Length: 384
Ligand SMILES: Cc1ncc(COP(=O)(O)O)c(C=O)c1O
Image (cartoon, rainbow, N blue to C red; front, top):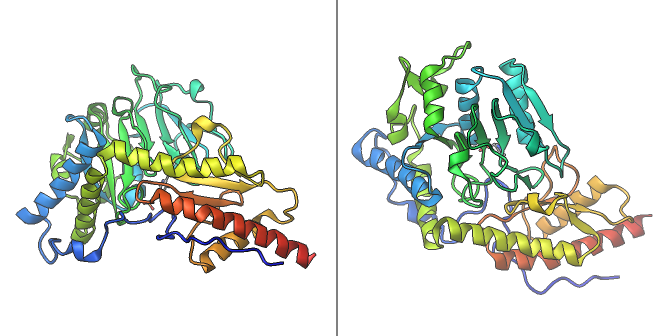
């Protein structure tokens, strides 16, 4: 039996959850103005780094009294810099419901050896947010990239908290509303929602986070790459573009291009609308087909960026092999690249829906998903 292929293919088959698709207007020639071969401490380099910081503030609506820094080692660098610099002053509560959140638990419990309260939930679920004690420092991931489960909003975070909130927002920033008054440390990377390059992370500090940095010295040594203070005072230069070490000016130029594109689609509002439309196309597809479902159980926690899917057809014999075969088939057809579930996550697919992805491409790939599903079911029957 032959199963007909859909007539239309996505124009851009890139649905990776990181590095994510470049903005639709991207072209390498547009990076020609990069300050290459120049010192990043020269005026031209500093101006571009400052523009990256202030462009981020403008688009994300970050308050004027929050510091924004460009730091080494992508989002991981930014998160670990925060954990190593700030924790230990009070009790810590760790919230995790997928692989990256679990990684931060390992950092805090096994590496920093802090006696943290750890709250976890399985893939597809979220921890009981109502039980969080904001007398503690609370570490969490806004959007769990590997499970497609996000916090629904910031209402659960106490406005009058004593502890700090430290939020890994790498697959949320530029796609979801982040309530800055509820977030003391927020981190993300350029390689995610804006489709920039990896290598650099961004760290956003509230005035309370700065106060902690200036009043508390951790019991452990801090490498230079993590140090945000000198002699008990914040190194303000970091937050004006005087990076701790040498950044890639090519990556900076690429980020500036991505910020310009973000402005052209209506800034944060436009970016959120694009991600919502992309994710909704997949949610509707799941509603219409009884063999596939969103991994996130509660609709309020469903990601609009890293949409994770599971196959639910009772005929499937080996779930992991089936999902891999579907992803491989779609890749071989050139219609969907990098959509296999994350290596630690349950078997399934993950389709990136951040704003750099065109809704027409999501709409075009879904009939292909239905096609690949039918082909694999038929192949399985034939093999039996
Ligand atoms: C939630 C989350 N945290 C951290 C990371 C690590 O990011 P990076 O590789 O940019 O350091 C990722 C990457 O996918 C992520 O999704």
